[in-house]
Length: 117
Image 1 (cartoon, rainbow, N blue to C red):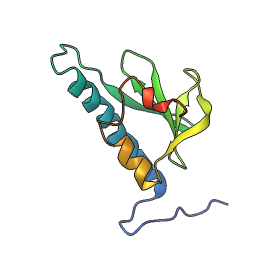
Image 2 (cartoon, rainbow, N blue to C red):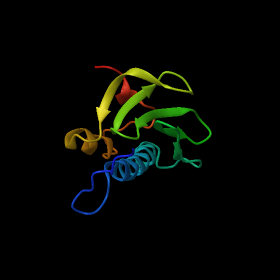
Image 3 (spheres, one colour):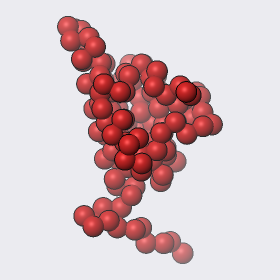
Image 4 (tube, helix red, strand yellow):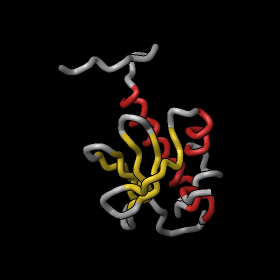
């Protein structure tokens, strides 16, 4: 028996919103790099890779930047290429966390903001 996903006023489900939020997050990371290194001949790009449980945010030509839980929107620092670290760093369902992750001044393309504080 499968449950029907909850729809918001605009007709989207939470998982659809999370996918959109992760895309905006990748754009924020790219913009952060572009602002720090405006004359870079080879700008850093990020992509979303869909896994069974997580969105994997990868730096193209680099490594894993972060993992985002597809069902909850919780953001994790990577422990390895294959999986996240134990502790949740941010939660995209929380507006303040999402605003931070979508702000290029806050997100650091190198991932420094993902360390435990």
